[in-house]
Amino acid sequence: MNNPRDELDRYTQAALIDQEHRLTHCALNLWRYGLGPQDDPRSWAARRAIVWAFFSSGQSVALGAGFIGMVGVMLAWQANSLLGKQNVLVEKQTYLAEAERRAALIYELTSILDEIDEELDAGKPEGSGTGDVVFSDRLSGRIVALSRSLRPYRYLDPESGELTDKTRPLSPERAQLLLSLIGADAALTDLRVKGADFSRADLRGAYLLGAKLPNQRFAFADFCGANLSAADLSSSDLRSARLVGANLSGATINEANLEEADLAGADLRDIKDLWFRASDIKKARNWEKALYDDDESLLKALGLSPAQNRENYLLHESLRQ
Image 1 (cartoon, rainbow, N blue to C red):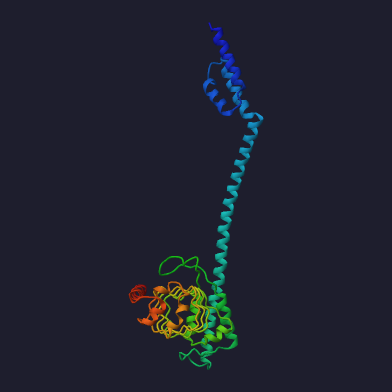
Image 2 (spheres, rainbow, N blue to C red):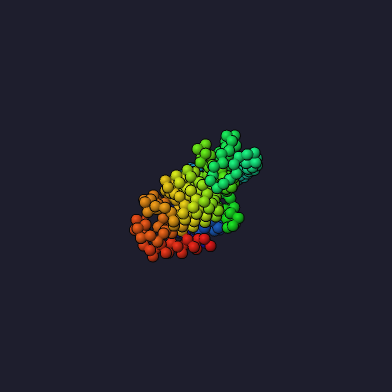
């Protein structure tokens, strides 16, 4: 027979459990009493309390808000996923469109080179190394338009097998056009006046010995390892150009803009009156790592020691390999 006092305690506890509406406490009460005997009032009280806790106004609002929040997160995730796929498709379409445009420009480049040969065969003076061949206005206009249309881009470097630096897109086609014009002994100054642009040209390792390149646009071009010995770069725009390991010995750089150009390991020997332009040289990056003549007055003007210049020679030789 049940003790009346214990029975009273169970009903009292059941009343207290029934009035508990905090979800965590309701869950604890359900765990303690919910699976108890069917005739235990605390069992039914714990079940009623947990139901009330879940579906009371405050809890319902919280659960509803949480559900809506989860739905919003899922929809946002799906939207981001779709947007990412759409961006990939747009990027592919952009690359395809650019590839088609570039293919058309390569055809134009080939056509221009053929017309250069035709004008040379038709009586224009053959190249004599003086850069004095002036083409017809029509052909010059095509050359200028093409040089400005050959935009820089990232591409797979055949030597390294890696994509070119994304911060420095280059144009190998501009370099090809320039080398072809040099081979035709073209008057590049005339083309520059008409608007020719060779900035960001990929001229790495190019053989430009004695080339006549005065007053040209070479900003951000890459001349790493190029042979520019005895080349005429007077008044050319070489801002932010890369001349790492380039051979500039005997070159003419009067009035050339070298601001932020990279001269690490560049050979600047045998350049006339270079000491007079020490302040211009110092506008470049890594100018202190370039190779200079062992001239005491020049090194003093630059603030370099003979020992440091010898180290720069070793750097130049290592970059040539």
